[in-house]
Length: 434
Image (cartoon, rainbow, N blue to C red; front, side, top):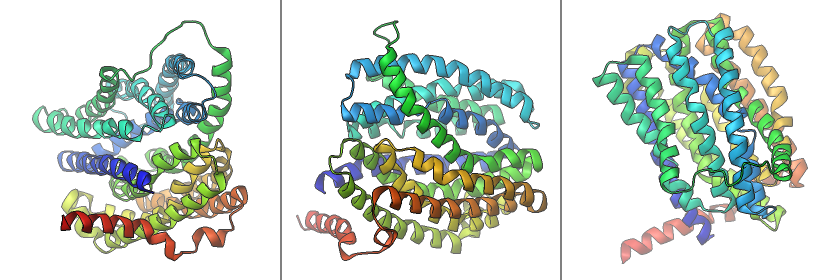
């Protein structure tokens, strides 16, 4: 537990910085740009973000698994991952461009598209590298640099929009610089991907892709549940409604940083865990603790939603208040998936997420087609609420079935659940007395 708490503190520092600078960037774009411009930015980010998931081919997760289990040597894995990265970067950028060309209707300048898709190779590189860090259980090293993109993006956003008046282009260049910064940091630390041999290691690549593709498909389905509303809002509504939705969603989705505080640790430790059932029970305990913390923050945000939106984004985004309020219960429920999926992914079982998300994705699509024309951004939020709620129930059922832990044991609180809090409090009191 002491080792876990040590990792938790390190991850906590990273996650707090991610939240602060992420919210700071959202505030800057809201204060310096109009809701319509924010809607265009959301459009420019949606396809690259999906291809940063699909293009990754699940290599981060399969790398963590193979490195953690020591199935292949680290040099063989690194070389194979580098070759995969070069190929997937090119393919992802080309396909993403054509998606913008054929599906997007509100892009004012294709220079913005080129800047947007230029983020993909840097993002994929950083994602692949993180799999090596997690596989070696180097939580400390991983979190030393994990927050850098959000920090650079925030600074560049303020600089390029406020001082250079680059508006949407400035926001997109800031996003690119954020991804480029951690790419440079990894090169300086010599933890970047690099080729040691031009010959393809067919054995490693085949096994990584066979597992990675399952991760990629699972992650794509999961992320479509988060992003499909943005795609459909752009096509079924206006840039204004999309801008309003993106700001309301941006606040509540940071609640997932609370369970994600644990997720990197869970994933890395699950990959090397010898007693799978015992570890799954520990993850269930972390879920129960996460639900308490997420629910508490969600209630506060629900009660203070209007002052929060006005304080952060201003009156132009007042319509984001109902969006935020509708999304909050669904975000709380989806904490079930956010925490427990990392356990099964770390055990090389990503198909559980895929099974549990397919039906909610179809529900999400149907609801969006029905509600967006009627209610705009609020309709998209309602669709996400229904989708997130159903996804949580599906995943809880499949997780229970896969691990053999009854649902009542997963969700039932015990006195021992609160021992980590007691231990942290004891350490704080002890230090204050010294």
